[in-house]
Length: 141
Image (cartoon, rainbow, N blue to C red; front, top):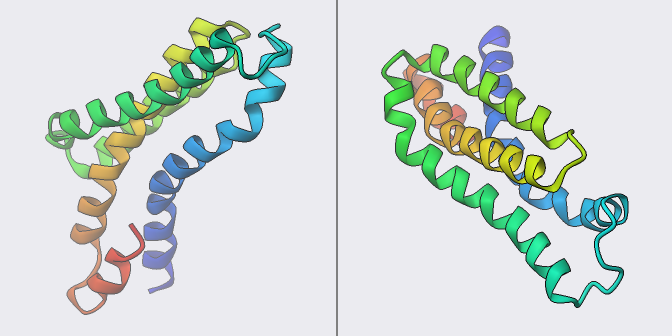
């Protein structure tokens, strides 16, 4: 039971990163804006458009990921989760490049992996968890 708990909670972290990704940007906006020489006025159209673009592409990526996750799941749930982790690393790597467009593309890819996780994680947990604890572990995802 200990190994199973560790495995399921580890897999469920894929879903946690989606909420972290959306909420984490709020605190980083000002620092990133200063770093990239965005306008000082946070009410300017340029500033608002850049911030909104970064927020929106993440959700667009997640939507695309959720709709296309069945194709990744065809390789198997575990392999799908591993593929999703590689996609996530690519997206995160792109967000580390000091360029606005690289950040946007990285967030799109990051969101795509979050959409994949939101489909693959519950499927994997329902397959791995024994029937007597599947409801408890299903709540993790």
